[in-house]
Image (cartoon, one colour):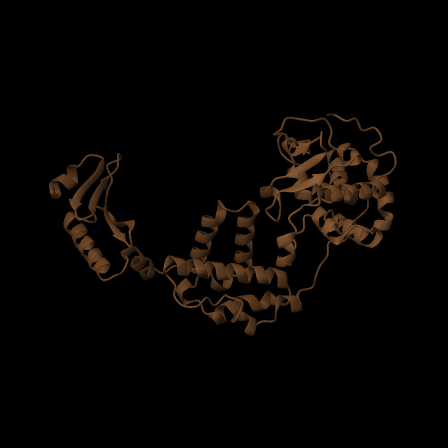
Length: 391
């Protein structure tokens, strides 16, 4: 039954059809709105036509008729509407960030996207219609930072390209992406590798590791244990800080870091030496953090806690991450362990695809020998001497 003006005004909460996909939606609050339900290429869509009483029954029918004409002509009314409504670059960027948020492993990614775009892109492109952004606009946003901050600039370029791709996927932008690198911007800007000043994390020479670890062994608290553990496992600080007891197998002396916590997105097993186990403390519940904050229950130690410890020890010129470089330099220069064993200990992926196809083992047993040799070099004789096998 088709709707009447009286029924539109008095209809109870629910969905009320007028025929050919036109519906009146009435909410429990009494608000009423029009929706046209249709299909394009086998997919169902709901097109909002406005709220009653601003849009009367007659007006809703006319809008539905106009939309059906577009569909018969091979167009999608929703796409047409989006194309007719100007969207700024900033609008599209914030929409894209929100759509990606749930898929990012780290909540910091959204903040990094937003902060870099706000700092380097929105002042120039933010208020421009995303449909009108051209190559000159992208280059104008990138040039001021391309030489001074090449690594940041390259990330900004990738994010501009992603936003413009998003706009194209929505159907509100057509043509090539002016933010793409290969075959386009690479003809206008120098390669990032040509201008990038490689900045290595300052590292401690491995020749003085024993002296450093001797000094560290006299430090107390969670940060000192976490730093010692991080150094002796050649782990990243974030992997240590997020470590739970469920990841620790004391009987077999293995720490298994799940894929979602690894930079490469792949599970990584770490052999635990006695000196490493001595830093773990009493075993807690599986969900407990091994290196939890001493002031905030259930929270990991902060990402600056180990760095602050280095500063208190007067090692102002090195970083926590730099100890991975110290380990790599020592293993490559002072041992006979194969390169692939050393790289596996650092959880580095193999860049050569052919080599990676055959490297299916994680070389765990050989890595256990490597990490024991590292512990022998890096730890004072007293460290780990009082280890009790909890298993």
